[in-house]
Length: 279
Image 1 (spheres, rainbow, N blue to C red):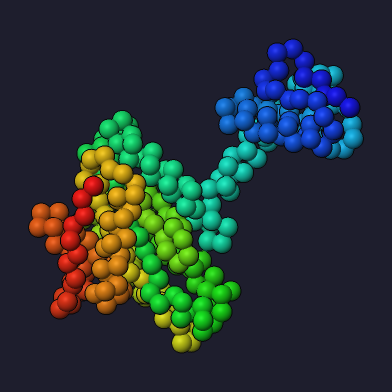
Image 2: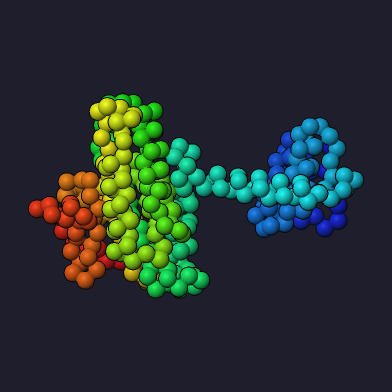
């Protein structure tokens, strides 16, 4: 069985058994859809379906071009599939892959972004970690811990401004990316998130449950920065927040370079002062 591609096909598909041909047509459709060539993409998808059902199929052949409704459906399905590939399956927050790609793009294009606020103010990145989360899993089980993570993400998302996003960095650790926010604004956003999580009715899940988070906030200060360096700085400040007693937001004062804690935690007697990294 051979698929007829017609003149000047948009993507190469080689001969082979129906299953292999269907896979090739599906791959060609995905590539074309990414380029916005919906008509050609639809043709390849339609061929793949017919091959899998043991029918003779053509691209742009006797069955005619796709209808507007069919093209709209393909666009929606492709957009939904692309969005799902960016999401963490448990929490529905963005995943690590999206975080790395989006943050790299924001930092690389800082001078070229359309938003002048982002260009002049820069980008803040915060790392959020649940305090003593291992104890939650050990005490109540991993399925219960999953429910805690889902509620945590809801509280983190609740206070994010337009253009910001939350991504699961790994395990019980999440990243907040805040483009166009200076350090003071980002610290306020993170302190509000910390307080919401502290005040959340965790007793609804279990009468003895109490959840707090520690947060480290780093700032690009309107200049180009490497993803690893910015994430590394946020991670260092997160660790400092934990060393200082947890349930706190740590940041580095831009003028003095000293590490401070936001809100009432700033009155704690001992706040570690790690050496400032360069890179």
